[in-house]
Image 1: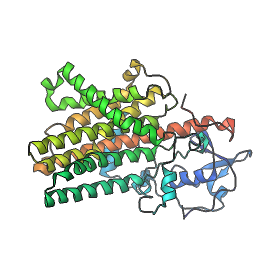
Image 2 (image 1 turned 90 degrees about the horizontal axis):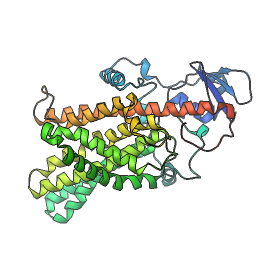
Image 3 (image 1 turned 90 degrees about the vertical axis):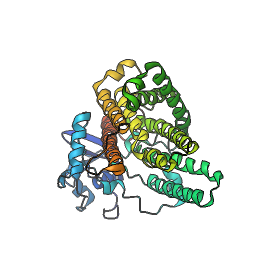
Amino acid sequence: MSNLPPPIPKAYWYYSKDGQTFGPYTGEVLQQKLQAGELTTRTLVAAAGDSGWRSLAEAMGTVPTPPPLAGGEKPTLLAGLAGKVSEASGLEKLEGFSLKHLFSEVTRKHSPEQIEEHFSVGTATTTPPLQSVNAAWPTPWAFVHLLGLSLASSLVLYWALMRFQNPNLIPGWIFVGCFGIPFSVLVFFIESNQLRNVSFYRVMALLIPGGILSLVTSLLIFEYTKLHSYIGAMSAGIVEEVGKLIAVIFFTRKWVKFGWTLNGMLFGAAVGTGFSAFESAGYVFVSMARNSEPETIMMMRAFLSPFTHTIWTAAAAAALWRVKGDRPFEMAMVGDPRFVRIFVIVAGLHMLWNSPLAIPIVGGDMGFIAFRILLGLVGWIVVLLLLQAGLKEVRAAQAGLASAGPDSGKLSSPS
């Protein structure tokens, strides 16, 4: 924000884009949207109470240089892959997205007070009014710090385990690798919920019970459908995604005010993280009991967890919430094409992950791992596309409040 001028000297502003009016927003939010690439200096804006429109540059009194937009960059392999995923999912292509912006806060120092405020969300006093929500691309940073700490701690504990041969270190090694790493990914979704309307307590209330219920539900589906007998390990792509989604629906069935796509994404990520942690810990424990290369299992189950269950369930739940909104769940909702297309992609990614496929030109174990990373990349693209859809949903709701003025009430779910 240091390259931008001082805040716009009006309390609330509207802007016009694609023939529609959005707002009211504070001047600070407009600056954030400019920095995120959602607005340009030529975007027309009007102060609340004024009848005239002017460019954003005129409103700011100068012409700040916005960051380059994704659309203006040279086509890359990643952009081409994102376009294909967009077509398959039925979601709009990424607009104004930049990895540089997404991770712009990672290297900045944050005081303990800033960290506390960062996670103080979801209460009656910390949930912002809808018109004050920053619906620009988020800038999560804490999850990177936690992920790095978890990876480093896991490696240190493994070194200590090998060095001292002390079995008391085993539970810590399993906990950090199988629980700490997936939880770090969950923090990404906590930070990306720009609505700031879901408390840390609610997330934790989903994490462990949701992980347990999804495991038990999946085992029951395996038992009664016998899908494993027909397609082997790939059957988990169908069974486990259904089991996790059932857990999300069950534990959030009374949370009707959390009907936003961003909320569904966070709820799915919480349940997916619990499932991932418990399942990975089980695999590592069994492999150690059998003395069958637990290090390899830890790498595949824990170190690659940022590409698996957490993002898969986040995407599936976000897709369902796009259909459900703040209405009670009905079975007819799972037949909606907006959900079906995403769920098929998620289940397909899971099935391919459990397959023996690898990238042949890489060869060996690295070809196997490289293929999983490619699948994870596709999964993250789906997440980003749904995150974009969730942010646009918020902006559309903010536009609906334009006629109500800046004194609108607290945050509520989309109708």
